[in-house]
Image (cartoon, rainbow, N blue to C red; front, side, top):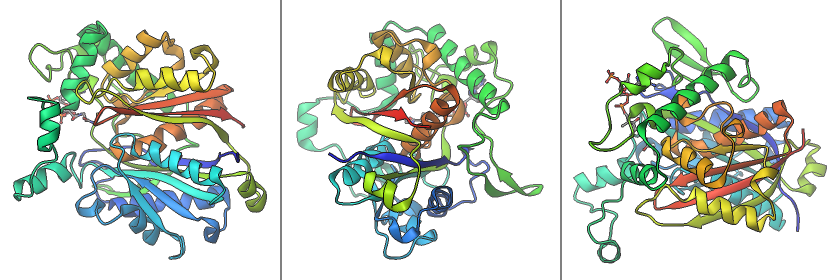
Length: 390
Ligand SMILES: CC(C)(COP(=O)(O)OP(=O)(O)OC[C@H]1O[C@@H](n2cnc3c(N)ncnc32)[C@H](O)[C@@H]1OP(=O)(O)O)[C@@H](O)C(=O)NCCC(=O)NCCS
C-alpha cells in the first residue's frame, strides 16, 4: 500500500471571540492557509487534486461547501475541487484521514486537508439553533429519543461526567488549565510557534497589524485567578477557565504519496503511520479519545511508551486529564505547547491545527512518534499517529 506524507503544515494564530480575526470571512481565512501551503511546499497549484475542509458550523458564511469557497478565494485554479467535512470537533483531523486515504489508495497523489471556523461570525450551534428558531425542527429524531430517553446531548454535561467518572476534582482541572497557559506562554515567548503560524493582516484601532500571537493566551494567568472563576454548573467542577476558548482560526496540511514526493520534488515533514476513528457513548460524549487511543495503539502494535508527544484536544480540562490518568501518559509528553484552554479551539479548524503543532513540536524536540486525538460531538474520536521525518 502507498504511504501518506505531510509535506507542509500551517495554522493561523487563534483569534478571540470578536477579536483580531473578526474581520475575516472564514472562506478567505482558509484561502490564506491554502496559499501558504502552496508557497511553503512549492507545489504547482495545478497538481492539487482535492481540498478537504473541516468545518462544524456549516451555515451562513460557512455554508455552501466552504472548502470549495476557500479554493475560489485562494490562488488554486478553478479545476481544483473541494468538499467540506463535519466530524464535529474532529472535522479537520478527519480531513487528514480522508486526504491520506485518497493518496494511499493511489487515486490521488496530492491533496490538501484543512479546517476553519469563525466562531465569531458563525457562533457555535448556529446550524442547530437557527433552523430551530425558524420552525425547521431539531436534529434529535424520534428513534434517537427512544434509544436515549430523556437525554439532552451536551458537551458540557459530558465533560462533567468524564470528570466524575475518572475521579477528577476542580483542583485537578484548574491545575491542568493553569499549566496549559504556562506552556502556551513559554512556547510563545521562546518562539516555538513562529514556524507554524501564518501571520494574518488585521485591522485594529491603531491601524493594520500582523496577527501572529494566539490571542486567547492570558499572559497574566494565575492559579488564584483560575480558581476564582465561577462554576459552569452547580455541583460541577468546570469553569470558563477550564474549558476550551471560543476561537477563530484556520489551518491545513498538504498530503502526498510516494508518487507525489517524486513528481512534485517535495520533502516530507512526517509520515502517517496510523489512523482510525471510533464511535463511543454519545451521552458521556467526550470520553471517546480514551478507548479510541487504546484501540489505535493495539492496531498499530505500539504502546504509550513508544509515543514521544501527544496532542489531545483540551475541549475541557477533564478530557486530557482523564486521558493521562487512564492511559498512564506523563504530562511532560502531552500538549507540550499548551492547548485549547489557553490557545482556543476553533472547532473545525482544530484538527489540522493540532497536527501542525505536533509536526513542529516533534521537529523541535527531536521525537519520533506523535499521536493526536480529539473528542467529538456524538461520542466519537479520531486517532492519528505520525512519524517525524525532519
Ligand atoms: C465556557 C464558555 C461558555 C465560557 O464562555 P464565556 O463566559 O464567554 O467566557 P469568558 O472568556 O468571558 O470567561 C468567563 C469569565 O471567566 C474569566 N476567565 C476565563 N478564563 C480565565 C482564566 N484563565 N483566568 C482568570 N479568569 C478567567 C473571564 O475573565 C470572565 O470573567 P468576567 O465574567 O468577569 O468577564 C465558553 O468558553 C465555551 O462555550 N467553551 C466551550 C466551547 C465548546 O464547547 N467547544 C466544543 C468542545 S466539545
